[in-house]
Length: 208
Image (cartoon, rainbow, N blue to C red; front, top):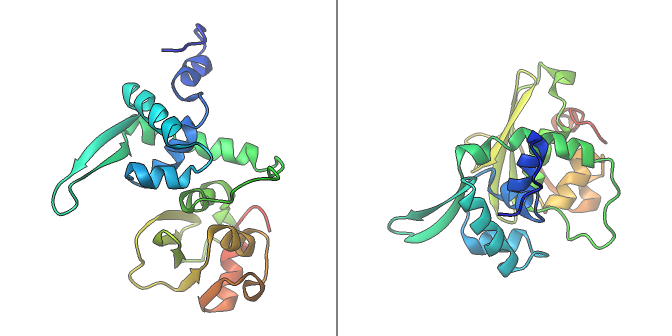
């Protein structure tokens, strides 16, 4: 195991998740288990060998677990342990800090999971605590839902039972509509539902 040989708790944390791609693998697993292929699809710049190496290390550290799904799937998936799930507030605060940094010129765009977890970073529900609604996102990887109530938000994979608003598009276009006030008709984002409700929803973010 590589180590900073430093007793500081920050150094000890970085011993476990400080290597390149480690926290991004955690990000991609935060909302649920994934097969190896899905992980590499979400981390295209890493390459399969690097993803496999980091998965082994995270598994050795008890942050990631490997599970076998029974019939009819009969496949192995990777998931976060409770220790891994405890990194969610770390990702949130790191995202808040990093949101002011410039985008790399050759960036590959947001993954579906990065888009959904961005609500942890940008959502500021106390601005409209009376708003209650369910938003369904139809993303390239499938449907996901955000539920707003009492000034908070919960996001996760899966279609909403009775959404008040449906937004369909890729993560970057959806982000530009929600966080930068871009016109959905210009970006190609499909909106099903009340446009004033969309405006209230996107007003509850830190940017835009």
